[in-house]
Length: 296
Image (cartoon, rainbow, N blue to C red):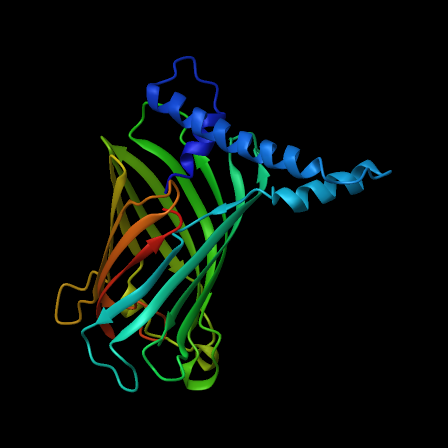
């Protein structure tokens, strides 16, 4: 949700707030770490006759490929879903890996970035004897994000993208859908407000694995992010907006808190509602989990 900070930092600002200076200092510190790693490992390399070959080798050593976290990266070794489901334990491990890579910056002169992202979420039945992976969701995504030009505005950035999500299974367990979406980022005091709406790309009825998925996930969601000192609190709300007996939705609460390492956080997650995973898009879960977050 803080992607818009990057675009905002690109803009030419006559007045820099203390927060902006702190952000620039953090970015400079990260760049310094990359340069320091490059200097240390480069000193052990033999000279290459070709400059491009030498540059490629340094890039591989320092891992300076400009790949960054996208959504939260976490491991919840212990989660518990109080809702009973057939052929599964209430306890399982859940983890998520999510990364992004900028492809093009400022192509249109709007300080926009075209970004490729991928999110991998897994539910792992570690309480079973054979410890099978029960469900894995794959989510590649392509989007453009751009800052709102007026620095003092309530709205901070816009994001437009296309996202595919599937679980990689076949026949009756196959689940997948494709969406176009628009998202905006607002700031109210210390809180970030990020509403998103989407349109599901239609499929042929014969190949649609989940024709009624909109009835459970609706056509959008709302994320609230509140940082407090070294803690962050997030609320994700989703609803189909059917104000009758067919009302379906979900709520996810996240709390990350500091640990002994600067970039390692404790993480508590609570989920209640439908569609925690694609295989369970039409089933309810009431899950709580605790573990670690590697990014937030």
